[in-house]
Length: 565
Image (tube, rainbow, N blue to C red):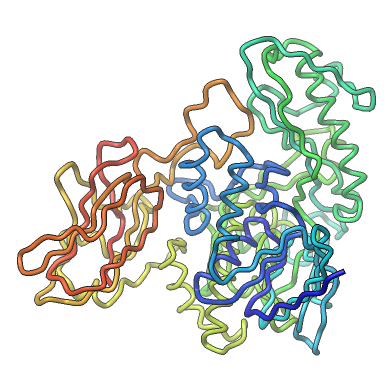
């Protein structure tokens, strides 16, 4: 047995998309971070172990950017074969190779040491190395989904559905209960060029007709999200028992598609089935604000907005597959986007505990909109950046300068509805070829186009009245926030042309400095896959120019922002 101790600024527990974005954001802002994840891979429900595609806000130009977009674009560039191991490796390298971040995989958080209302340390067991890791930190972020630090620290939390009267939520049940949305085991299929057999195991269920699966779409192309159980049980402590029942259902569903009637599946084979259930709901922390249905429907009009949601209030029946009377979920309308406040992301009673993911401070009803992974990734980047600001300014989570946090997030390409980024002083002082480049809005929004659009031979430029020292440039490009495909597919067709880098993204460009009439290429970028890019200059110039050379397919060049610092 081995014992190891870490002393850091931030300990992140849980390595789903929320945890990865929390840890990377904090480390990039200069903190020392430990990310403790109980699985061998990162990504949570998006990982190769569970394989739910990343969903987020509905509507034009509402796609989540920041770290999530960086990860997805890198995956499109590298993962031409649509392989989940490659996707897992993209997530892995973001954490493993990040300076200042120590990654502890296969490490289960088991204990917490407290000093009054502060967490002093947590201890995790890493089974692969037979090592106990004790992590002492200034702040702790619970991104575990199940809020594992709540029972270990005494942090206030909620479980189940609130009564309709508590918050006056019309779509909540009349009486409070401990029911939740359930767990799912997904499976994936692959198209081949010849007929494929499937032999159902004897222990799987048999569904001889569509009537055995009422209201369940099971055509080729669905991701079988409705293979769900456990909302009327304990989604945490019954997870293993639920997995067995879910596997029996999943194998029976595929047997039905293959062998019980004509579903066009003759050439399709079962490629993968998930042995780790993906969870939708369990414990939810209590923060200074508990977001409810009315807040969602009002668009989240909070002054301390640091992220946004935009999924419908998608409330699954607790019985899941056992609910036979109607479609297995109710989609209640929700605006997109709606704002999520900082006050819902830190604990009401534990001073140095923050959280991101499906465990934030929301009612069950509001959770049905905020729980999807695109939103969770934004929440993670928000708390990672927020903790960095708290450490560097020496303040508490509750006493944070949220207006400064909002600007930091927008600098990192995290859109905040209703707010505009303030460009640097040098950007505002210089003369610019196209004023849209410094309007503080890094995407098209509300029908307003906020990008410079050009063609071959054209460029954008800042000029200065006298030679001026420029440290670096910040560039935001067009990655097509309205693309209609996810990070990964749910089925594997013989030909799948959609999963690629967006045509609109610049593939190659040059950063050019001009001094005394002489042009100098400071950097030439090839095979670009970044929407947000920084480029060092580090010298005096009379002008800074970005010269687009090619896109990944589109004819027009589009640049949202160019800043000089």
